[in-house]
Image (cartoon, rainbow, N blue to C red; front, side):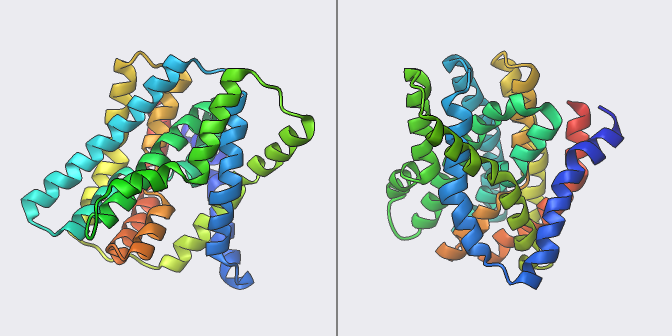
Length: 300
């Protein structure tokens, strides 16, 4: 894959939709929260179900994908915690840095980039990683937010009850049972699933414009290194150690190289967990990823 292919065939379509969201969102007065909730509660679960229910993935491969994805997240969190111990920052900034260093934008941009760079056949792999990173990111985010006042254990129950987690469990049951869904159900779910990527990319553009210009501080440097360099490197090494190659290895690295999830900012705002720093990390790292992702794709 040449530089031109990476820029024009893979990243340009993503950038066009993000740019459209940034340009049209304010003019049309679009409800960003409503779109996010629609994607999170309807399109996301439909996508997870559509790609996993009929996917021909060996259970052993799924386990190795999960482990590789988690390895990248764990390394990023470890770097954030190490930085916080050295600098002596408080719980809130430590939590904000850990979340944005590990919880990647595997839905908004990750799915599209995997599809455009590896092909539609890699979407089930990206779907497994999306579910893994999203679920873990939710547990981590809500758990760290609630740890200020209560036990983080309720976060696990809340994360497991999210629509995408429930859809993932149901899709795996359908996959293992070999049940054929009625055509009307299958096509309805497919139509909803097809809406996820464009809606999330448009929403990302709207959110980036709304967030405004980030201000620099030390935590942002940690997030840049952890999320865009350390996480994909460790995830890729873990995938290789687990004998994952080809599209499996490439999808692990791509999904792990995504900038912080926009939803991390939503959680930070709702939980009042250093929302300014989380939003700044999401915006800045997303902008810098426009330079790092072409390098990742060229290497792969």
